[in-house]
Image (cartoon, rainbow over all chains, first blue to last red; front, top):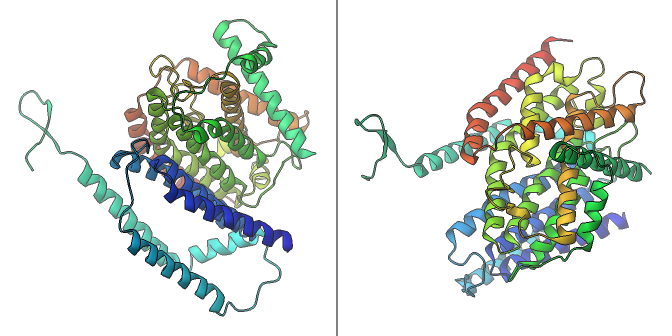
Length: 181
Length: 298
């Protein structure tokens, strides 16, 4: 029990530490990967709390998601390597107060909410996976399917907007890019 | 104890693969060559490029090695010979191998070199191509076993291996595994002759040694995964279970090596197009066929 609490605390502190690095570095890739490892630490917290499936899933998903975010940050930011010493932050006072309020609200909920009786014995990992599968394919199916279809639609729409329009011109079937907007 | 045995088996397989690789490229069978080459790496100067991202530069080779070993940790050599028989084993191996991408992005960004950086980001594109073809065939494998536990998955193939039960899944997984291990013809992140080594380009000495060891370990891990998911794992007549696991793993690893030697390097855009327009529909078909078989055949 104490060992479990210890590891939850260690990974929690690691998650916060990497979270701080996200904002302390000027390198976009470092920032993205720090966020990645912060989320990985959250995944490790899940593992320490005996929720194996969620932990492994979190660790897996974040690796690819944050890496893809890294390349977009490199593409769109003016100083991706952070070597130019550019100031990348803005609206500091607003963001600090928003952060403090949100953090305070999260701590208040954690402390004040009635969490019900504590489970003494967590069911084994196989039972949890099974229970999660039944939940996803039963009661929560509509919610997840709706979310999935919405994300897919957004992805297809974004891709369709991003692809330049090619048309077959009359001269021998060579492809030309349509420039008119 | 299991940890030591699996690690030694992994090291032994890596050594054998390195010997075979040397044999196919130079035509000479030199069993001591990988060891000598490793020692030579230790003796050479390990240069750090100018203005590197030092944390990434140092972490990348070690991270690649760690994730390859972590992936192997859930793959059984025999019914009880597995480091961690997790309830989510088939998912865990995906989670571990997702960090191959992170390691390569670090190795690409870290040294502050153009070729390395292009190599690192290229692998991100490669991931977009192969990732679904790793996950979806494993889904079909888990469907047949009705479990994510790797030992149960091997148990489900008693009598009929998955390579026969779902050959389509095997072909897709084998190709995607080669792309994940960035072996030829999918060696876009390193691309010798075109990117001058890519992510390997700026590494020298002991760091290059670790990087090469990690790459070979990754190939063995993926070959072992192919064995567990499709080739019946430890099942086989006469020989003890661990021997069958090792023989099959090495056979898959060598076949990956040989397939790479006789095929030209594929273009990034072509890989993406084929994976998405052909690979993913076939993977979906595989899931449907396996689903029907699981429901219909008792």
